[in-house]
Length: 94
Image (cartoon, rainbow, N blue to C red; front, side):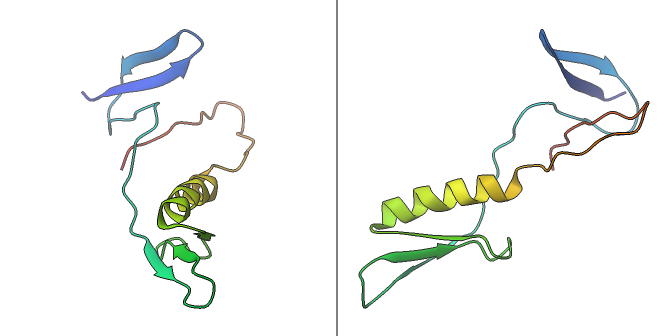
């Protein structure tokens, strides 16, 4: 059976459960971004087409790229939810 890793106060706690492999740590993903110079200001606009409304800018290309990384991280940050009794919150890697 696949192994499941759950977060606990002492680190990751692993045990067997059927179904799928669930990871309790962050996974880096690669996102497509579009970087475009502004001919009037010389600044750079940048956005992620797969994440509607996720956009940023910077004075340099490097600054714009760092800013979109932060924007994507904030866009993907999970919202707080209350779970019913007996339910548990897990994270899955895709």
